[in-house]
Image (cartoon, rainbow, N blue to C red):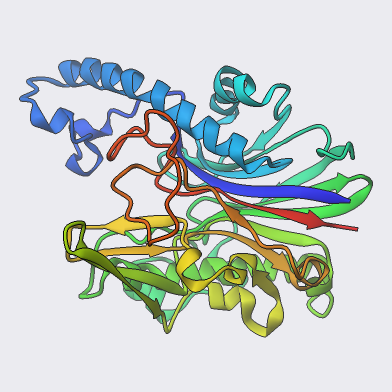
Amino acid sequence: MTLRLATFNVENLMNRFDFSGYRNQLNEDRTLALFDIQSEAEYRTLEQARAIAQSDDTRQLTALAIAATRADIICMQEVDNIEALKAFEYGYLFKMVGQGYRQKYTTAGNDSRGIDVAVMMRNETAQGQPIEFVRMTSHAYVTFEQFGLYTPELAALGYQANERIFRRDCLEVDLRVGGVPLTLYLVHFKSMGSPRNGLDGREATMPLRIAEAQAVRRIIEERFGGDHAADKRWAICGDMNDYRQRVKIAGDAVDGYRFEVINESQSCLNTLTAGGFCENAVERRPEMDRWTFYHTRGPEERHLCQLDYILLSKALAAKNATAVPDIIRNGQPWRTIFPAGQEVDRFPRAGWDRPKASDHCPVAIALDIV
């Protein structure tokens, strides 16, 4: 019995306007930054017009990327709420995949912007096996102190012991697929952010992502038993904002690009995969072809990396030892630099920087779960 599972950061799927850019330049769209806006009322009017004008093309591309996964179940990040998800599925995705994803679930997490993790499921797999929702459990309220994960590194970053571990949530979703139990853990870890305390953004936020990874592992071990958890059917899906490798890019379009694979000495992913607890199935692809995200801060800082993961339990990975995930890159903007031989046909109307399906690429894998 085959199930096709996917994960995708759809980027700010909202049904409300964000006016915080008027007082916080970091949140201001670059288009509005070009204009001399005289009042907050004027800013709100312009922001509404900008968001509406941009959203239609963006969500068409988002829907095309989801349709390309051919997923029976898709885990999503940066979903505002269930109403936004329903409106997107009916207004965009339904037009591309027919009956589509009738089952939709999310819950409020800890992100101050309101962007949460969510899951959409068909009523049955492509093979006709029923997909049944059993229950979901939010772990958004777990604290460092509660799990014994408060460290001097976190204290140095200004976090308190009684603060919540997850910046969004670890949403535990129990399902039955053709009567077979399967548990999904939906996550979206702390973003890398800006440099602080003399460290770059990734290093400065690493202690928090490690704590999040430790918490996810503990939740799974407590659920299934520490000695037996790896032998159960589960997968961790989401945007972990971290990587074990990156492909550094040098050169330019005139003289040619050069690509170098760099291994990282530290990553929150190591916490989850240690001891064969689970496997990053994307690492079954060639090193140069594992990326789901293009990062750039100008010509001096460019790389490709994997931020989006489907981590399979040891048992599920062994059952699907030859399964290689697909990475859907057709929704990438034209500015994304592809290594030679990896070029794809972009979806119609994809722009140089936007519109785009997302900065992230969906990851999908076909799994035998029996």
